[in-house]
Image (cartoon, rainbow, N blue to C red; front, side, top):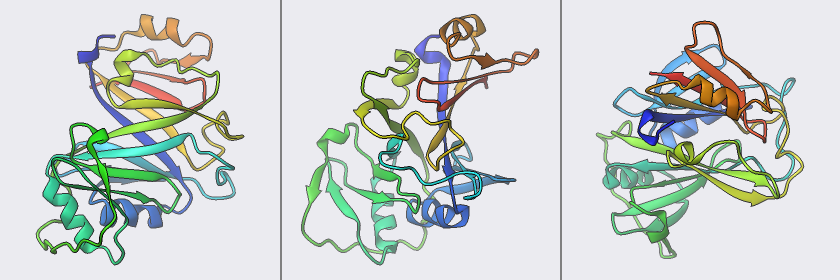
Length: 241
């Protein structure tokens, strides 16, 4: 699969209380609710394109992660740096601040304990911690972020490698070595990153079947999508757009 065939990667996060998390992603991070269907809430920006999904899974079915989560960090890159300042101005308490060449950034924990970095830099390595107190001016016009993209850092157990290839990784994935008893559990067990959906221009089923033969997969007769999982049991969904 060539890198230019991948259009978008959309993570799904399994959460306990969707209402609490919904408020966080909409009010704190400025994401726009797009579609609410059963246990799922689709979130995006003002373009109306889906960028991530929340899936509610109550405590009778799933539980809190013990130790380290599979999701190391969710990274939201905003096109307009001034919108980050507008988000900060809404807050009663300013979270951990950073500053880069384009403007401010901040890191905050979701109600589910997921670490989120929101920034506007070309390279997050340019970000430096801000220790002094900063006051931000309110922007009543901003309701939702105009444009943003999401990338994901995933914790993998030591001596474990992902089945995802360079092409997918270059479209918003990074892996870190970690230790934790829940890093390999099935994706329905814990409130964590549960799925990565890759939207591609051309679905190369032969390539996918060969690559994921060891973990198993499902592809319908229509061949419109391909469902499998990675070595850490995060579901992987490939579909043509």
